[in-house]
Length: 590
Image (cartoon, rainbow, N blue to C red; front, side, top):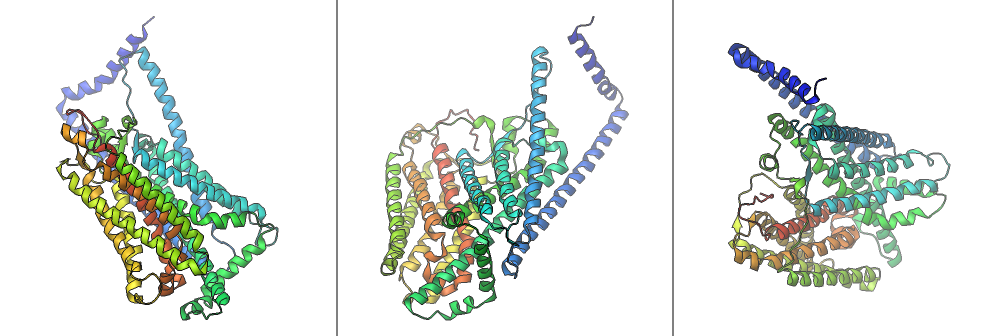
């Protein structure tokens, strides 16, 4: 009876015979290479076509995601007519994710089999998979937090279904199925993005993988747009109703702009929708909870969908790179880090977590003090803004403290840039970080939001309205602080301490620590105060209820995301710039 190892050697000898024949016969080798090149070019052409068609598919879905909720907002119907569209999006994404999980389980079983085979016969090699992660640990935890907020919000909407009466147009089972599918999709997507980023598995079926990723991207964008339009519509109605009630209470006439809007078709339709919704409720338990939690939980869905869409877009874009890397057989971690088209990849070997808190205590203490004052200012704002006689003071004090925060952030950023000039500058091997991409995209929201405030204050005049010169100082200081801070992040990310003195003194680390905590404080201000359009009554007087609510709901999610991404970037700078490494050790972030 033959030994198993002898049988394996004979099998490998048979496999090597065609290669020996090609080496002996040059003409046959040339013909074989030409055929392989033709097949490779044909395959590459099909891959490009798949990318193009999948992108057009996603574009069509996104256009429908814009048209349907906008049409519903201006239509005369009293109930949603497009729930089936979102069910298609959620079900398609869930089926694709289940398909990916099945592949993952199958791949794991195959790896276990070959590992057992390799233990019995060392001549067998085990191919290592390219497991990658997008974004740092801090970034992934933040996205997970936004996802949990989105799940909670959908859960409350699901619970509201059981309060609906059995009247016609009220007891619609889709109103329960839709949030339930959204919960399942959000949870499965979090698991997919942060646990199953194996591009080699996706290449088993390129068409399914690319169309599946594009379907998920379109689902996230449509979810983002739906929540944006729905929340804008809700706030427009509540703001207009509040201004109407305040005018009646104070026995004053409405402005011409408010009067026209309250008598417009848009307000009438929205009012009919709310009246229909109230009439459908058998009890009034979940509705107050949703109204109170909506300003805080609904933006979580917007931010979660935005971040996931960007991550999935980079997965779709980089899928071709991983296929080429696998074809060349170059699977080393160094090759992964050098050849990626976008500097967003953190290999799995970087999962170690260590923190050196030296030269950071002063910045941390100052930041905590600023954070405490911010919380006090917000508490005073929410307590005083409800009283008519203290409303102006409440708005003035929180805007003044916001301007102080921006001023301190600007000074800290400028001094930090100067302190880091002596630290070595390393040329990056890759184009753009995921964190940097999101930082620059969300900064557009910061510029739009505060520029609208400056334009409104200038055209309205400082003598009109409330707040005086602070209506220009606060948004102007926000623009300056944001610009200086972004320059600091892009510059500091590429610097690394190279001398023993720099590693001991850690220049600029106190300021980076302060800026990290200060951005958390600004994130709280934007999330809790600026997230509401009624927090800026002067701007609402100038732009009107409709326009200012649209401006706020379009830009504010980006402003909040910018503060989150800034804290993520400062954490990465704080951790890596001053990290002690041996001279011959390669920096994984370069």
